[in-house]
Length: 360
Ligand code: KG4
Ligand code: ZN
Image (cartoon, rainbow, N blue to C red; front, side):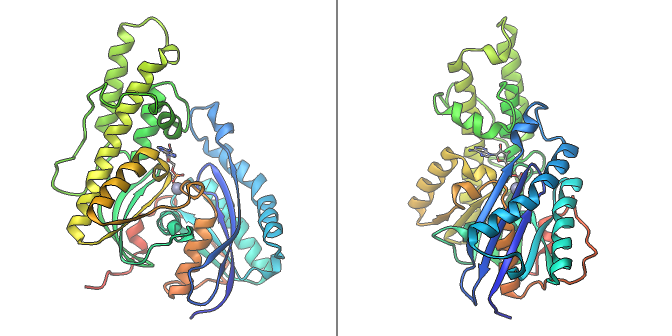
């Protein structure tokens, strides 16, 4: 059923409270009216990582003020909302419960239906929020803090996993390596910034599973190799890692980034070759990485492949991708919004659990 709908989206799966309004207009690509985000990064920094209980408590503080903010920015009233969407999983259970609880309470109070969204489907469809939205089918490289997957995407809800990480995700490799280099949390952006001044050939680091002949990834060994390098360097230095010469750390950061990017690049190109598709979508926090974008752009240009990314500020967690995924699922008729306000959340929830069969 194709109708016009105003969708409120709420994301609270981890350390970012995101709220957004998306307008679905007939069969056209739904459009983003407004979005607002509160990042808890500063609060968690003191602990070197996300503290789940603190995350939940902070989502509670932020979610309704952010909702008022996006309504005001779009010039809409709460009662104009047709569907309330929320992240149902995967993520931190307590954090997810805040978004789900608030969404269902709003839906019940307004007499409007609600819809639980898969967080990774949100990332996957986030490039549809950009000025240059992709067309189906495409290969997707989904690189978030917890997931690294290559997918064949035939349409909304039609996802086939072509390969995935058998241990750490690419985002985790960035974060754990950054921590070893004394760069704090979340390490990916900091490591990437530092790497700009470094020599990517300075340290020889492994490219795990690069020649495995399949599309799976493994990043745990790379993190161990970075740890070994750090230990070797520490053995001949008196000062703590935070006080090491900037150039040394920049070289290690650049070498680490190059190893992660090379694996992501080569496997993505192999997935395009295997499927014969000429369209690649990159989504998730690591998709913001500058070197990854540069190298993918160059390789894809050579092969005549179009690459699509979400806008930079919509690469990491946000409410817009949740409202968008809900809008596209409703538009495609793969899910109905529900007026049963008894909700649950799914902290562990593989994306293929929501995939419809890919037509032969
Ligand atoms: O998608 P996301 O916001 O959260 C999850 O759903 O996990 O991804 C967060 C991840 C973190 O590991 C973070 O370090 C990484 O994305 N990240 C980056 C960059 N920006 C965010 N990694 C490398 N380079 C970046 N510029
Ligand atoms: Zn995410």
